[in-house]
Length: 89
Image (cartoon, rainbow, N blue to C red; front, side, top):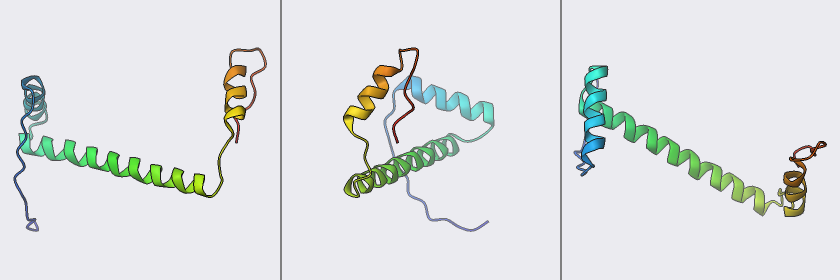
């Protein structure tokens, strides 16, 4: 197994959250640290994806790839009718 440099991070968490971490660790037969690393990695992945999608959306706006508010409003208004419009593209 390769050696990986580590750093200790400390956080105060509410007791109910800490208890859930301990319950998961026991159920999965993993350490509390393993649970915390999994959770932190998943959260960071989610935030990086959110940032990537935001930058992608802003690039679309800069390139003029947008749908007018009127088109969206007309589509939304049609959803409660017998003849809903197709989603604007």
